[in-house]
Image (tube, rainbow, N blue to C red):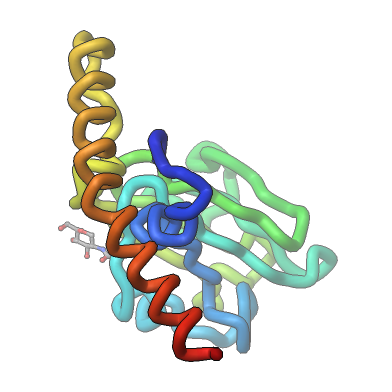
Length: 168
Ligand SMILES: *[C@@H]1O[C@H](CO)[C@@H](O)[C@H](O)[C@H]1NC(C)=O
């Protein structure tokens, strides 16, 4: 997102990471929701964020291994991270599978579990710099975003002018 002027903040933001509210606003992270169906309806890319909303006295979020996800076995060997705030934002930082369960007794067995596959970012703007070539890739990236700004700034100005005329 480097190189975005304030004018382009909205446009740049729209092209960046996506926040996925787990279960959407209706149910959030709760019992009795089919999270496999929820996950099937969307795609997850590196840098996206999962937002878990729940009552912290009734639920929690454990990131677990695949086998713990399957067994719901709370022996905690397969627990990678614990979230308990009730409003947890989990950054999906890598292109891999992530597994989450609620660790309250019986909840995972009752179906309160979520698996997502995270894919590599599709846009070059969101791609992390390849290791070993920081300066080259920084230069390439700033050239790219300058070129991008050169096309987006006139477009944005034209749009603002258009809106300005429309509301007068
Ligand atoms: C994730 O990908 C693996 C391998 O392609 C697949 O077996 C699994 O069903 C996928 N899981 C989800 C939740 O899409």
